[in-house]
Image (cartoon, rainbow, N blue to C red; front, side, top):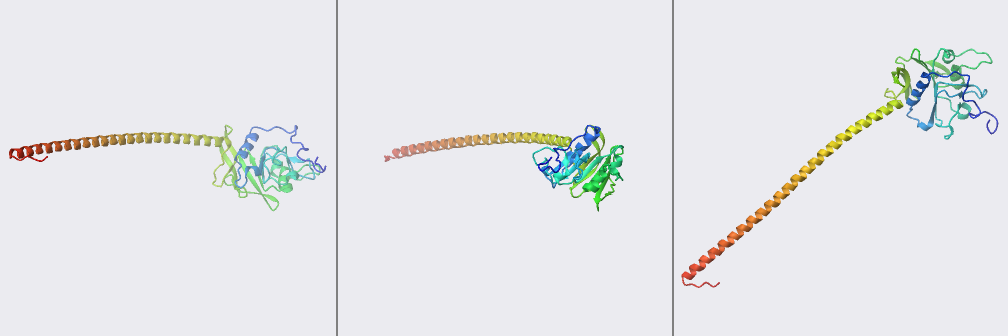
Length: 296
């Protein structure tokens, strides 16, 4: 009980019932797919909660009465209870927020209570329909029949559920900026029709397995791009080396030519000096032959 001893909390109320039957694989895998693809863009992951088969205590006047929806989402509440504790159940008078959408997976045993209201006796519990529509006022109620693969969507209008027409077995929920629809594909290695969420571009939101595949494909693309870049780098390095070698050869050729020109200039200068000396000698000899002694 609470400190004031008034109302039971989730710590006081049972979170499971040994007398209730177990669930089949579809009732495990389908809610998991809904959870993995539920990503409302206006809500950070820490500000909404999804639950699968978690007890929903709905009536403060009858605190031990509960329903166990196959899947439901609550917006604007912490992901964890009080942001630090795991929820054992969802207690309306504790949380103060009604689920925004509930999904039930239809079965022959539960069809009556999930698809219609019921005139009940005083000691009979309300059906799920009654709880979602009349007691809680859940805005959206989805019922999926795994035997016929039919999705039925109900929207709370004027306090009553009104069924929506689904020509493509899809419905857009504008408040969520998400849509819910029937998808044919493979999930948990089983190919069939499944219920899942889609985004504003009418694209199915990827599951965890699909996200991993996308990441792996992106990694492969990145690796291929990296190989291409490495090859381009090698080519550029080879071109750089080739250019550097060419520049080096040009520098060496330039240096060789400069040395060659310098040598030629030196030889020309020496030749001209030698010729000048020869002309001087001849001039002196001519002067002497004329009896003129040059003043050198």
